[in-house]
Image (tube, rainbow, N blue to C red; front, side, top):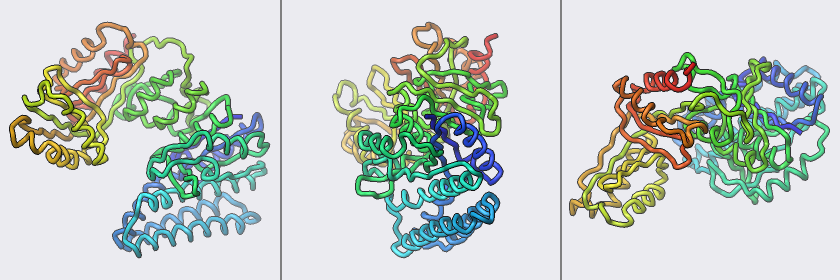
Length: 461
């Protein structure tokens, strides 16, 4: 059995949904297939905007709802023939009516809790799964839709729920094993043990596919998107960026975390545990081989595998002679930030212990600064800490590759190339795995940095 996941960019309109349907139906003729679907492109963002506007009692959410309803029903009428139209329309309008009532409820109480937001966000995948399943059925392919909320069980961490794997895998085996029909499952969504809708985090449909493949013991996961595979860098910036034919799971995890949006970072975990290969394919260019992610790959011919980046980050520098030799300062800093739900993306501290540098999302930086000033108020008053420095408009660049491990001179070559371009580096971090060197630069320097690193390491011949 194979799991095929199609992202929102592959399902943006009726023509693309037809193309995806053709790809899935042809594959189903060869072997049993489970298809995992994202919402149509842009729909999840639209749903979240509706919820936020409804919470503010802003009537504009009704306009967004009307636009979504028109798009969904127009796409449905294009795809479904007259014979099947009434049944599909009833399902779609019923689900849209439910969405309208949820939004009205948010408007009335003027509150959108994380639990309510997950429910609203779930409608994009649910609508798309019904539409796609009914379309394939109308085209003569035996198809069944199974709601992911009946399969994937999570805790109550709304917005980014944690999967309860033993229950989930049992549900998947009981419901999907041995199915002769093509199975369609909405991605991204799950439910608690009591049946409350949860989500797996943005772009979580990849994760859904990996969970289903692990539960079924599949031989392969295909992630279909709008690029030819995992690229060596951002092709919008680096003109010579190219598709890597093979990368290992660890490289894929590093690249996905640092901004390579081809695959969700958590996707690799269930696949890695059972050694299930993941193939990244292009819906618009299905004949291209794509990128295979697995544990057994041929050795790369280049020193690094790829360059990725995270934009819109800020750096907070904590300086003070009173931190030198004092146990627990770093612990207090990170505990306080965790309590304020600030995600620390990168840490750097010199052995002198005179300063701690941390990097977070730019939008979280004001909250982080306020939290630190409150937590370390006494140290500030007694001058044990001299200052907090906030620098924004920054970007993290990550240089990633399996061949970096145990290879001398990588850092020297990297920072020499940046020095020649007069690019200033504000902070550096490297893990002991040696697969990743991360550094922080000003956002305006990113295009030059990516281009020079790519030329230095990935265009060596």
